[in-house]
Image (cartoon, rainbow, N blue to C red; front, side):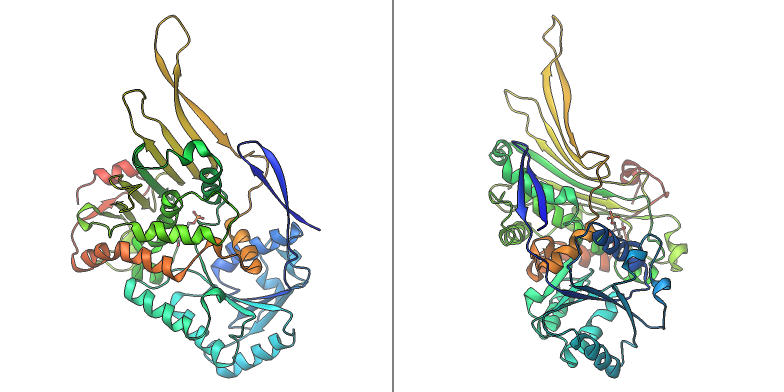
Length: 453
Ligand code: BG6
């Protein structure tokens, strides 16, 4: 019998939770030769296999347009997948090829669940979903694992969801937001739910402001077509930043392993956020971007800063700043929660470091040693043991989809709630080509913000 090891932060008490035996699974990856499979999915699967956490009965079917050998599919470090991998050459527009796929999958029998992973460009998703349903590959034992973007605005997301709903039930659809699966993001729920000292302070009486920041050194990495039709607001804010915000704003769960309750609370938090005010939205574009995408008139942003507010009475009046950008001088994702200064206290800062150097830090005020009555600020810092490896978010995504645990995936209602928040900014930016800050690659975020519009 295998076990999940978890620990309660307060008492450092180790709890062993028996892990249900994982169901027999066939994972079908559309786009096995693509960048996502190569960089994320196959390494994640190889790691899960090395850790002995794949279901005892497991097959991986890699779908590609051209005939390809297993050895060409598996990147370095993933050759341990050779015995579970099968390749399937398919023209994804051809109904006959879906019939062949169905025959192959039917041969496994109903004891196997079938998970279809869409590692394909967004425009390819719906046509494949329709074809799968067309040959009857939408039975109860099948699931869809979808990558964002889920639409490009509220209306298109609604249409996409209702099209998919016509063929698959909501519980069969897993919409990936890999930030939810990051170890520290999961820890926010655990930390706030398990530590009463924070639970009681978690409101506008004690908290002054919240900042959710995710900066990256990389640019758009050759994703020209995708980026020109999305941009940072759609790519990063609608998904990752708003989901991290929801984890912070949601009512802490006292039962941190109640996996059904967590998405419900995230949704309530998202629904309470007011639509963002375009007047407070800042966008930027790194110099060279226009050359890179071959569009000298492009107004697509690579940097965004927004300030939003919640209507929840626990949070009313607390500004929530969301900021993200590409080609900034450093890579980091963190959430900073600033506590109010009161008559009897100085301000404290609590930081969740999502990446890198995952951990939690708190600024505390203490007496400076000596004869004078002076204060000094000290940091209480919790970091994961750097020698132990944290699982990659994609490992968690795959394992949780196999286990049918929806808590780390975005529901259709969450997706729609996020688009609603961004809709006024999307519309204003669409109409108005003004107000873009051009910044040098490698700038600090302060430098970007200081640029004129
Ligand atoms: C993806 C975005 O979802 O997340 C990319 O589409 C971004 O634009 C990436 O670079 C960042 O992920 P991570 O895990 O490297 O921080």
